[in-house]
Length: 271
Image (tube, rainbow, N blue to C red; front, side, top):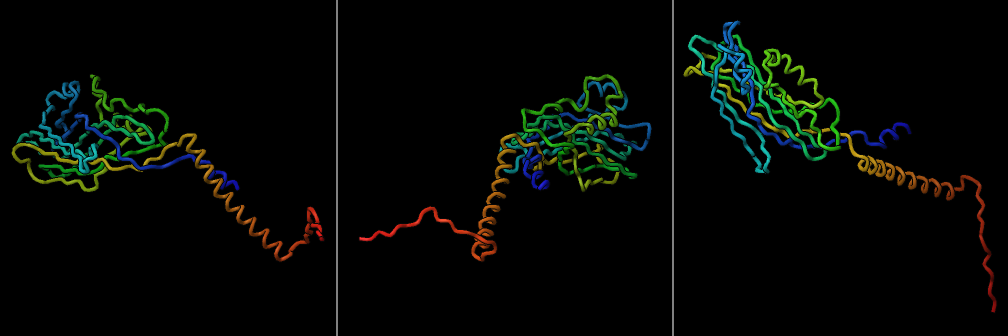
């Protein structure tokens, strides 16, 4: 009975929804070279770029959004980043952060700034890095059904800061992963093209897909009430049916002593 009572009240519910995602045209790029003391860096944040001094290298960035099923919601982002490099610079690794506006509407309303982080390192110098993956949602607790959740609609990177520590990846990741709702970039098959950089550029190409997510949320009062009533009614009908069958079986087979009472005796009417 205790197990049944726990199932009677709905605590969590599930549904599927494809998020509405927009690339914010904000990014932070770090390129590792063969010299440990040397690296290349660039971002869309002016203060970060000023802190890089001789390490700053301005790339050519191209982006293209795509809506496959033409439902008015973008399904993926294609991007390319061409980083100019010197003939003496051998690229051994890359780290890239892309920032998005991420929204849910259906049962739980959520608006936040989301991050996609991709990286790759190799002992061999490369000319191109290709990443094709999905921007996935990570929940530490169920979403709420009340109002619009804007707790995390704040900058992942504090672009107004003039301190180097605020742009360190360790701090950015630590603050981001502490959130109850966050995203991660899942790329199962990254490709690192070996060889020296062609045309004095290192190319980063990628696709960020926005898949449908299975979401868990805390249902509202009326949804819980309807669920409980349906569960109760289903059990009640089973009990009524079983009791009727048992009663019929007992009386037909005279398993217990019974007395038939007639509320009145019919009278004979003679003419």
